[in-house]
Length: 125
Image (spheres, rainbow, N blue to C red):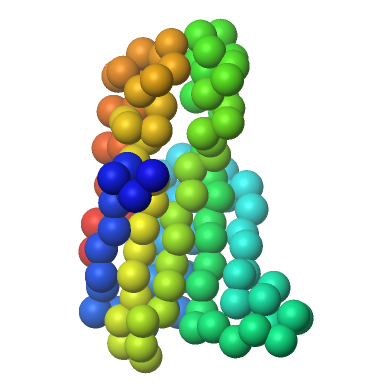
């Protein structure tokens, strides 16, 4: 739901934002689980789009808490950052706010708030 998606437009080139975020994910104690190069995937089918990457990440300690309290919440993780090049010097960055996306599960609200705080630390430019 768009209401739960936070986004920002950065006056920085896509490649710089991409490289910085990959490093910050690891530096902030998360595991980079997977990277989706959407541009490359759709190009294989003859579709041309601007650079678009999705970075999926999480931390094992939260998995343990989720599995103990409400395993259905696994449907709303891992966390994902979406990077989209708007032009050569502008990148849009978005992510699903974990406070909102996890609120309907039987989880401690403090965990979601901690996740959001940590993600915001990664995104501070």
